Image (cartoon, rainbow, N blue to C red; front, side, top):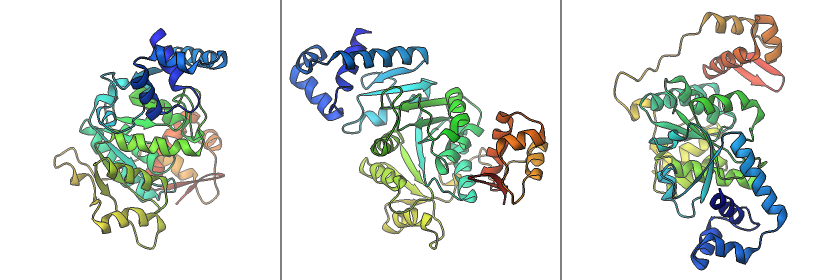
Amino acid sequence: MKDLFEHLLVLRSPGIGPVSYNKLLQKFGDVHAVLESLVPGDDLRDAVMREIDTAARLDIQFIFDDDERYPKKLRDVKNHPPVLTARGNIATLARESVAIVGTRHATGAGMEFVADIARCFAEHNISVVSGMAIGTDYAAHMGALRADGNMNTIAVLAGGVDYIWPPENESLYYEILERGVVISDMPVGFVPNGTNFVQRNRIIAGIGEKLILSEADLKSGSMKTANFAISYGRQIYAIPSHPADSRGAGPNSLIRKGVAILCQGAKDFFDDDKIVTDQPKKSESENTVLDKLGTVPLSESVLADVVGKNIMEIKRELVILELQGLIRKTDSGYVRI
């Protein structure tokens, strides 16, 4: 406990990042000497103590880079985070993994394509790493969760591991906690800003042994993630899109430059009977939800009342229908495509 407290005091000190943290340890020899030089104030000490207490209450673990549970591929990355916080099934981090990223504004077809690939990786005991954003990330996580097992996916957050962002993905967050793991390099309770998402992208690229890029604009965060993966020497795959769609500019450019391998589906990675490309059959309840939707948006709560189910059941069925490209989410609710 004391050792954890002292290391976190250094890491949570203003201006201290992975580079300066390691330099300080090398210069002074151990964390005690580093703290004597920094002289952290009572406010910081109290904040770190609160973080440790909150982590204990929420079953969040601190994983330092000398811990065997720390992701091996990420440890090899220069200036990797000295410590990660993790919530869920920590053993997921030990599995072989693939990063899948793309735009938040993904098409229904693009999301279903990604979900199929993600499911296939999970069925082959390979964890899917993504950033829990809406769109492509959502499809990657949900696709992995379609497979059996409880070490299917890793969500890397830009904020604290207990801070659910975006809020629309709250149900996904808790599903991942049950059948995967959520990690972050930010303090517990931290609310992210723009720069934190870049660091999150570095971690996604670092953990994955290969990266698959779906729909993405040229200047998107997903392209930054792909570029990080390229710099780490990872094998890159890109799913092509129509040239007239700006979301195709990112993956198409990497394919054209010869940086990425053309990805045409799960058969690019596996060749066995676990690969199923047919659309999953809709249950009777999903058909009921679909029948109630039209061109006028309906919210989850309204659908729950109309169909006679609870919100969590409705959310689950809407996810499946959205991944199948049958419905679309708008600001006002869901509409049938």
